[in-house]
Image 1 (tube, rainbow, N blue to C red):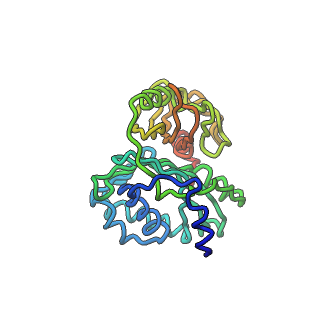
Image 2 (image 1 turned 60 degrees about the horizontal axis):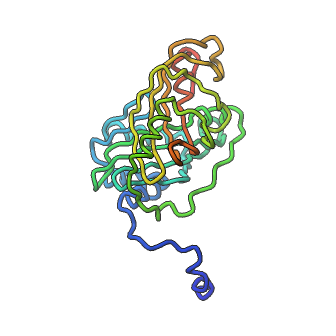
Image 3 (image 1 turned 60 degrees about the vertical axis):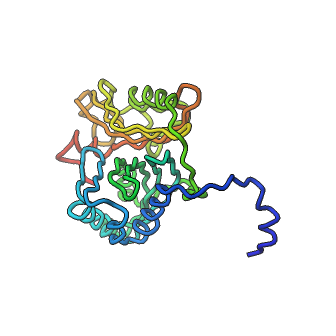
Length: 281
């Protein structure tokens, strides 16, 4: 490494130095030491024993009795599983992670897949206590069935240097209004992998399960209840049926409205609920 040249340009685009955010530092261990190293022993150091994972309608409660066994099953299917971070947003008390997981499935002859996710994490100042997350398992299922992996978004350039931003009540109001409309694709908001951009469930009732802000960013999880509007494979005969859709989002607010961001909806879970006899992962 040519340190002299680095020194010449060290001040270009430099950010004011700040001490590493402790929540971000904990998530670095989660991603690097645990997930990408496949070292379940690290869970004991970074998660409380009563850690709870919520995904779609599922609740995985208990680090040792439920969460670790579920992770082992995932690693058995994807023995080379990797996780790439695209965004980290933190206000010091809460943290959101937008990521992709990727790997080769031994259940599908080594077929490759990459799928996105958004997680909203809670901690107690020492260890993780909960995560409410959605992952795009429909995109994964499509890729494994077709044998053609999708492209992955670029990684965050410096996720572990993320600086916590204070919550903003105005951003929270705008994000809540958008969430209560059913997290629609407004502005530059991207839904899932972009292949099913239409509204899937009429937003007759929306429960905002979680919402927090950091600067102009907002992390949201909602449960949408209403009539199914179609647009998913194998569901043509179920348009108009009562449906429930879970979604997680990480968005940017400008002025008084959501203008950009990403939403991950539990599309596969919706298919399985509508067609329980025929839906498989």
